[in-house]
Image (cartoon, rainbow, N blue to C red; front, side, top):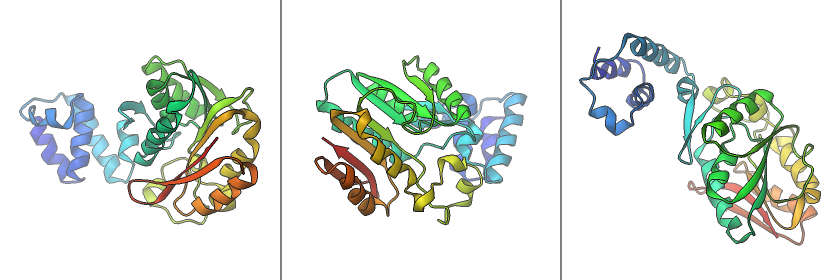
Length: 269
């Protein structure tokens, strides 16, 4: 079969955007290059795999898991069912954090709490002169993070442990995109049925991990520091007031994402 014939086949079952993503990934082409290869003959192995992947997407499996990777901050990272799929909002968290850290002395000491696929740590390491300790409680997630780190030949220290517990030094920046969905909150079935619950849901109306990190982080921070979080869009006002209980001498800032939703909490001194 030719590439064009596979596109026609795929579009019978799933959205054309997904068809192009799957084929581009399988053929190691970008979407624009795909248009220049419509008459290429595709091997039987790729045809079989493409049809298998079309079926998985049709059955509501996230396309990132089907492809096995995602583009995050310009880095192609492996993902699977043991890691949260990185979102665009987390790219915004990285971008804003880099901006806040521009006046810090280098090398900057950073702890990434709940690293998952390693997406935040990898993006920061490639953009900043820094040392990074990346923590996760899931050994399977850390295995994915290690693969991604090795792919880019980066020096990032992976640590298995719960939140701040395994840390042993002080940092300029602690960053986290922790689970923040309440157990009774309605979310899309494709997310609820596929992504790891441990990376999605949190007790105390989704606030548990923020509270734990905020109230215990002072002993792990230098005199000048930045705490950076991605947050749920309804959690900003509470977290601002909660942070004041422990950091009443710091700047506590809620920032919006590109959709105009409260999405980021920064505590800076």
